[in-house]
Structure formats: structure tokens, C-alpha cells
Length: 128
Image 1 (cartoon, helix red, strand yellow):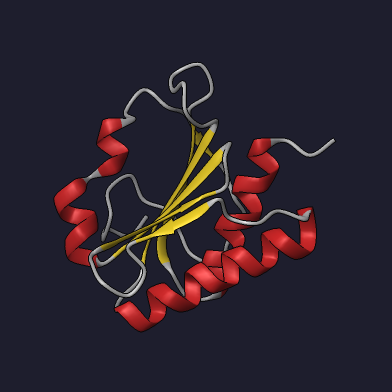
Image 2 (cartoon, one colour; image 1 turned 45 degrees about the vertical axis):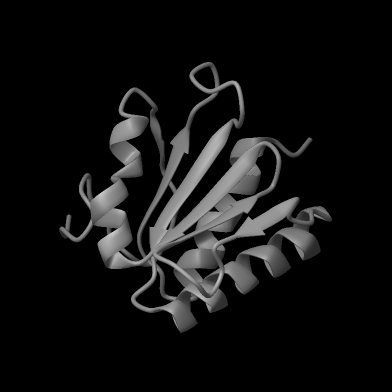
């Protein structure tokens, strides 16, 4: 049975494969009434953000048969939000990630280990 954590891991790996940086998965089950998992990543520019979003949508459609319920902010801002019901994917510009600091909003949430090519850090923009 596929869980929201499986979906979030796959989304994170898709983002990493498209060269998003600082990819983090937060397990917010029991903390949030809205979603079970949050994927946060950074894209260096709007073109890369679009490619990351497209790859995440394609991978989740192919692997799990999921389609995004909504996509907000694509192409026009520092933050793209992709809603997959139990999982939300947040793709930030570097400036947007630094400004919103979404991981701090969910500071109590455990981080889920995801096997990606990039080292994960506790703060965006810092190496492990």
C-alpha cells in the first residue's frame, strides 16, 4: 500500500533528479490537519522551478497514478506550490526560501531521509 511518505519521497527524488537543491521532506502527520508530508526544495531560477514541478507531476502520475489537485505560482513568483492532497510540494527561489523559511514553521516535524544525490542541510543554502 502506498503511503503519503512514499509519495513525498518520490517527489523529493524527482526534484533532486531535476537539480533542485536543499531537498527536504517533513513528516507532518499529527501536526498538520491539511497534509501528511511536505516536500521543500530550491530552484535556482524560474525555468528550473518549472522543470522541477513538471518532473514531480510526471513521476507521481506514472508511479502512483496521481495528478496534482492544483499548482499555484508557476512562472510568476518566488514560490510554486503543488498540491497532491496528502502531500504538498513547495519549490522556492533561493530568495523565497530564505524569506519564507517554511521548515521553521514546521520545526516540530521530523525530517524523512530521502536518498538523493545532494547532501541535506538543516538550513537552506548550507552544505552538510
